[in-house]
Structure formats: structure tokens, C-alpha cells
Image 1 (cartoon, rainbow, N blue to C red):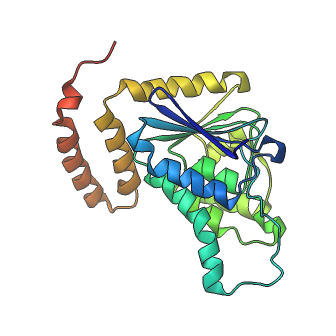
Image 2: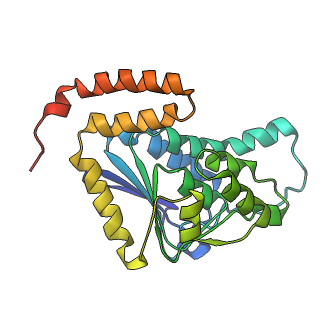
Length: 245
């Protein structure tokens, strides 16, 4: 079976990490495939659901804790890290909303992927952790995904303590959008997807564009951007089209 499964569910693209026997630990090839799918997602879907097969979302990178026989020079090490940064960037830059559905463990890379998504729905038994310091790794790769998602206090606690935290605490720290009973996770994600499909496409993509840029602007620039994108999107004929069904 492939390590990444993808299929269209109507206008939803579903991407599944498919190494359940290994806790969906992610290889570099999996990261590259996720990026390729997300880069093209707007051509085939209105939204993306990213999830894990089996009991866990993703327990981190498959290479976690594996030390190379010879330490690469800094430039080569940077190139090797690009696959991780590119995966996070693909989620941020995907033109349609990305929803993570998290059950079980979301550790390290898995915690970052779940947190950087536009919306993250977690089962009430989900567990989040940044364990890199326990492996003598400074976790700035993971932190780069959480830097504009998590609270400062929450992020520094997760990094320094390496503690596993519950879905409810992850919600408090800003890593997830909502926590639901595990039995209701798929239903809640489906409801959220339907809300996106019910809205006009220019609006859902415009919101993603605005959130992705305005949060790092100074306030006057963010207001000007809102004024311009508001006029542009709401003038579209697609915004005036009647609802389907």
C-alpha cells in the first residue's frame, strides 16, 4: 500500500497518511507527495482534509533520533531540511482551506502539520507533543509552523517540557480549532466541509488569502488589504449566484 492515499470526495480532496503500523511516521518522500498534492489542490477541490490512517495522526518524522554517521556541512543540512519547511509552506500556501482531523498522537512533525492547518478538529483523546529536545534536537523547524498559531507561553512550554498535552490543552494553547468526542470526529469534519462547499468559492479562497497575509502586516496595511479584497471578491458574479440545491 502507498504511504500517502489521496482521493476526491466530491469537491473535497482527502489526503491520508498511510503508515498506521508505524504511527504514520512521515518519510521525506511522504512530505514531498503531500506538498505536490496541496500545490495542485485548488485545481481539483474546494477544500482539503488531511488525516491519518489507524489509531494515530502522525508520531513525527521516521528519521527522528537517527543520527548520520557523518555530520553534513551546514548548507547540505539546510537542503535536507527543506522538505519539512516545504511541507509546512504548502499547507500555508494552499489556495483552498486545509482541515486536519486528528485522532491519537500528533507528535513533532505531526504536531506541526496539525497546527499549521487552517482548521484543526481534534478528537478528545488526541495527544500533542513536541519531543525534539528529548532527542537532543533544537525544534525550530516545528516551532516555525507554530510561531503564528500557538500562544508564546504554550509554545515555550511544549518545547522546553517535552510534555504530552491533551486535546483540550492544545485548544487552549492555540494548536487546534475545536475538540469533539472521538466518535463524532468524522461527522464534525464533514459538517465543516459542507459549510465551505455551501459558501461561494471566491469567498472561501479570499478568506484564506487574507488570513495568510494580513496577520503579518501592520494594521493600516491589513485594513487597506481588507478594503481592496472585499471590493474585488464581492463584485464577482459568483458571489451573486444562487445557492445550489
